[in-house]
Length: 232
Image (cartoon, rainbow, N blue to C red):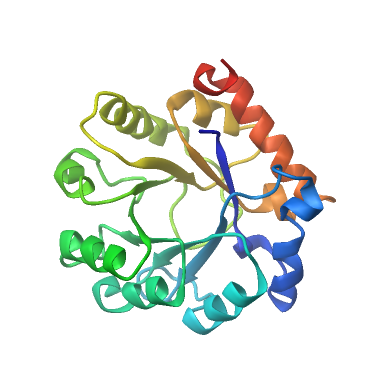
């Protein structure tokens, strides 16, 4: 197990997504140093006020990269729309607990369609009411900004939620990968790693760098140095 880095294409050049994916690949960063996942933010201008991209773009991106796609659906009615992303070939499909009607059945449908199932919580959404639901999921995505726009400042108060999730995983109450999304950069990744995050979504910290591939590798090295379970 190593810390996973998932560059967010929300901060990439939408006109050159295939090139932007290649820029964070092992070929660009060095063998074993590139992105572990490629984070795809799907927004519908209803659940969140922003509008980004949808399934047709994801289907095209799947043909352009071998990096597993981590699709984060910030949409209404994910019970209806999320399985399509799994069927298309996304590796991990994350839905918001605030939007799902039947999150347990949705997790089963995502897994049946061939994807890992992820459940996301907004900064203000507590974890405790959803612990039983999370037993049906593979990934917990803790939002460290309000969902909807990239480039926001990291909210350190959500790390208490991360610590609780890490405790539940370490004690065997949950079996999920803990992911964080929002404001992750060189100045925040170590605190997130110390709190117990497994997978770090980084947008502008990667795609705003002169060398996105090198930025991915540097972020991973920082995470490793911040937590003894990786650094030994």
